[in-house]
Amino acid sequence: MTNEPGDDGAMLLNKGCFCISLDRAALHHALETELGNPGLFQLVAERCPYVFAARPVFVSHAHAKRMESVIAAVESVVAMPAYRDTVLAGAPMIARRNPGAKGVFFGYDFHIGEHDIGLIEINTNAGGAMLNAVLARAQRACCRAVEEMLPDPGAVASFERGIIAMFQREWALSGRTAPLRSIAIVDRAPAQQYLYPEFLLFQQLFQKNGLHAIIADPEELALHDGVLMHGATPIDVVYNRLTDFMLEDPSSAALRDAWLHDAAVITPHPHAHALYADKRNLALLSDPAALDALGVSQTVRETLLASIPRTEIVMPDKADRLWSERRRLFFKPTAGYGGRAAYRGDKITRRVWEDILAGDYVAQSVVAPGERVMGREDTPQTLKFDVRDYAYDGKVQWMAARLYQGQTTNFRTPGGGFAPVYRIPDSANCCPDSCSCADA
Image 1 (tube, rainbow, N blue to C red):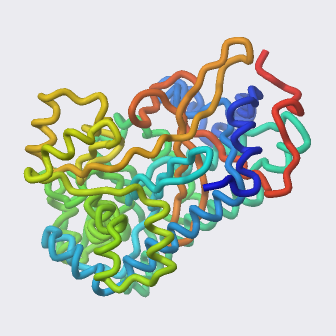
Image 2 (cartoon, helix red, strand yellow):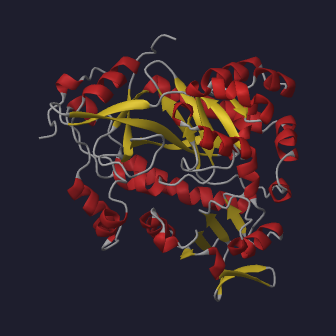
């Protein structure tokens, strides 16, 4: 495939721009003054020192539009009764209930190479949205061309308004007609979570918009007379940050009962995870014969097959072939998240291979991540990156990148973490030589 307009400019800047875009004084102001969270800057520095990358990632306008088209194609297939019947037939019973609500903060994760893109996975509880909103408030430009790519303050404010509107819509889609009054941000031992600072940001955003917001462990919730309660407070909506996607853990018992009895709006939820985030779905979405059998249109089929790396479910009868082809494959647990228990094929041992065969895994053709050169011009360091499109109901809300070393994103890489995505217009004239504030 030949480069699309703007791709070369993005590649050159990712490999040759050493300018720092993160203004730490502005970040401090955004966290503690603008957002009114005294002590949050220090908490971020202590809890997650590598959550904010110092430099941006550049993406061409053409690639950004193509990612949007892939998301639209996925949504069009998921809306098909034949797809839903096929996927839900193999899903746990708890996931077959359709609550009406779509599910908040889907994350479509892409690898972007020099000539192509690949949708490597879909998440239904993608973290980082509020952190990226803060990051957008703390950017500086190194040249006039880059200044035109900076996130507009109005766009950040609009994104945050859209977050509130999204939760209000989830409430309405679930059939509620009374005003939305309370939201619980729920995760296991939330104050110990790596992204706990983001929970505080969400809590403040909800409260600023007139909603009672609490941060809670699922064991702090209880179902009383058909109402989900946190102490004496009724909970209308649960913003679900759990990785217990099917609410199977004993600690999720109250949430499970609330879900089954429609006692609260839980979002994201098991139904959305089954339809989108189970990695076995990527095997269906990247299989030409399966797409034909579902009746997917030729245009959508071509978009999916060109942009989703071939994925297949690991089965014993495929073991010999997959082992022989392992160097071009990446192995992921079907219900995995955050890169846990995922393995690059050229790194696995026979012992790990036996674990893969005994578990529920998919094998995905490797699509190399993008590369971003960091450090100093005289001592460069190359990090990998992926691009996450946050989406709701098929519409992209925000775009962010994650910089890392190793097999998967980990927020443990010095210089890595969430990075703003600067979109290069097709007609942009910006190159590394024009940058004026390279790292000293």
